[in-house]
Structures are given as structure tokens and as C-alpha cells.
Figure: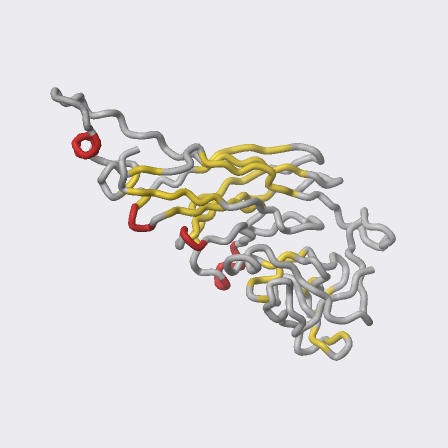
Length: 269
């Protein structure tokens, strides 16, 4: 069985883990899932059958939510002591046979944007809202001037999630996040609705509900960012995270994939 995590042990990102002030292991406060932090919120999974003050105890390798660029993008917990252990509580774990929690595992396996770079055609934003002005800015041919072109395509963000675990996943919600500083976005978006106080430089653009998923099944859909992309931002960065309300019990809570950064300029495309 794995050692339980304690404060003030540094997580893999270097931030000190917080822990209980009432319950200790080896004289150190026990870390709890969805309560304690290490720069970001510890979201687990933790132990499914060992609790401290009503919260699951944290185990090594528990996911910590994004709170900056690497190494703060997708960090995990460390134990910090070796005297107290706890079973994971998942039925499939060996040699730990004391648990009975199901073990689906939701992974984001694909995330892609339909355009890799955006051009504002001298209008300061994409897409241009005045195509005649964009044409005047970018047309370099001889008169007569051609008619204004149609608006450029909308950027579509496609994703796929898969249940790679052994049990059916409970229904969950996929979140589409935008990082407000697109030029300094983290490499992953491990973000839940409960963790936003630890990383305020992000906004939830949209969410999509997914029903229960049998083992081996996949789900694909798309998101769109419906606001204008302004050139003074330099770049826009987006990420997806499956299970933003943390409703699925699974042995790995990373559930993310590499973020997408799309540069935008005032040039003609």
C-alpha cells in the first residue's frame, strides 16, 4: 500500500503541500483531497476508503491543478513520510484487495484547432467585421477592385475523450478553458471548477456534458470561441479538461492534454 502524503513536503512543482492541523502521520499534517493544496488544489484521486476529517487522504501521484507554467502545469503530490500507509480503495489494484471503488479512467486523447494562425487583415481582430475594409487593406492587384470576400472561417476546437479504465465511467462534464495570457499559457489545463481561486488567469469558455462511458468507448465533440480574437493579445491559448466538476471516480485525475496556442497578427492572411 502507498504511503500517505503529508505537509510540508514539496510536490513535484516545488510548492509545499498543506495538511490537516488535527491529524498527523509521523508528526506531520496529513494531506487531504479537495481541501489541501500545493500551489493548486490537490484533486486526487487519493484513497477511496481512508478519510481524515471527512476528506480522502492524499496519496503519492495525486493530481494537483494547474497554477502556472511548467513545472506548475500538471504537478503531482509526494509522500514525505514512510511510516503510515493507506490502500487506494480501487477494486482493481493489487496487492491492495480491500477496496471496491470502480476504476474507469477518462483520458483526453485528441485536441486540435482547425486553424493554426489567425490574420486580422489590418482590422485589429479576427475575424474582420468589415470585409470591405479588410479587402482595401490587403488587395494588391490592379483595378478594378474585386468584391469583398466572404468572412474567414470560424476556428473549431475538436477533442476526443476515451475511457481507458476497467469500469463504466459516471457522467461527467468537459470544460473548454481559455488562458487570459495566451503568451504564457501552461502546457496542460488540469483545471476543475473548485480550483479557480488558485489560478485566476483563466476563464471557462464553454462546457459539454458527457453521459456514462463503458470501458474502451470514446466521445468526440467540438468547441468554439465565439468572441473576437484581438491582435493586441498576441496569442490565444486554450485547453480542455474532462470532469471539471470531479464527478467521476478514477485512479488518475490528470484527464488533460497539451494546450493549444494560436498566434494572431494584424497582417493579411
